[in-house]
Length: 558
Image 1 (tube, rainbow, N blue to C red):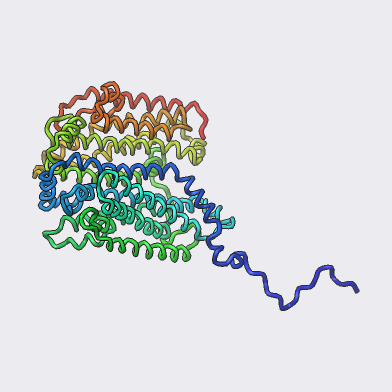
Image 2: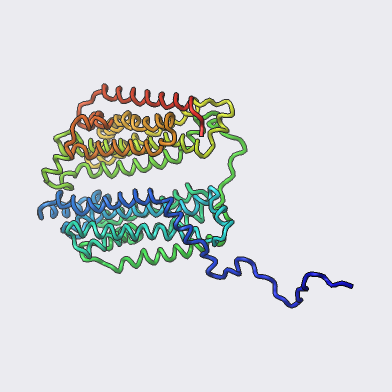
């Protein structure tokens, strides 16, 4: 009788541990370094853009304040205005002191903290819920990578971005002549708000099953925070100042850079961040991969009549973006309007600022110049929406959702035209929202809503042809040079924006200024209306859109 060739396994031998157990606690972070390097590589362009924009805010805070508020009397006038004008306090916050640094913190810190929070929201959601939604994390999870490593990496990238922002802000403000302690407090207050919303975004990524929902939830919390801060800052006479303490943006203000820094306030965002991170990891361990804690509602059994054609589909794809941009324009317009009546007190009596504002706005009257300049700015921001809406065609194409549509009874021209029509309607909607906000805010400040509301709506609509002309450049690129359409579309917007905003102040020649479509828009409200340039801009936008559609008809899809 022969024995088996294999050695028998003793009955008392322990079973082999599973792979996860063999790795031990350190195995939970396996692959973190590689994934972090990949995340930084993916985000390098976006991070540079965010950090550049946020550093530009610090440059403005450090240098422009000294130009605008040169004298002690002008700074004292602003301080008195803030104490007596709830609208100014709501928009910018409370002013603690009359030094250059205190004014810089008052004018810029709230919005710097807001921007830092947005940066963190987009970073964290991108590397967690967005990658999970597209299936990337499932693919990564099939390798030797711990389950929670993507969340760890997302938080580390956001933390690193805010630390770099802290250093840049401190250096720039100190280089402008402000105190080092105040500059560091400004940077810490700004970065601490970003860190808090990195943690809150991590929680939102566990709750929502979609990236859009996670971003929307986090941004909604940010909006509530801004509102609470505004109510608390403007509600001194009503005993509501305590509401500022409920908002992370309010904590940034309460650090009081350049006005007797209160370092202990920074313990609040640190504590909230710690609790948020622990909560996010706890929630991540109690849900399925690819699913959020809140399950989406099942859709209707049958599609609505809007989805019977490409226009309805294009609207459904972009309605969320239109709603978000519209809400933002209403809020921004209200902020512009309520400040308009007191713009003279706000910017002081500096001849340089008046001259620059008059060049951009096109009027000698300060209030009219301010409102016209702000309308041009709203037009430029609306052009950013229009560019993103037009470039949605390219993203639909690269994500391979166009070919199934074109395989049915839908032609290329019909499909492309549907997205361009939605971009047109969305641009009109967001500009009307901005004009409504400005008219309502300025009308309430001047007790003349009935007159100012239609006036501002008309001024906002005058910006539509210029915004569409910029977006039409993206349409041409999508049709003729699709691989360069995203970069080219945003570059065209950046060039037009630079010329429109900085060109008059830099005394650029008229031939250079004429490159930007916004140069040709009548300076409304207050200026002389002329339909001729608006007709030419509309014709140019229509021609470029036709060229883009013709190019799309002849090239390969994908």
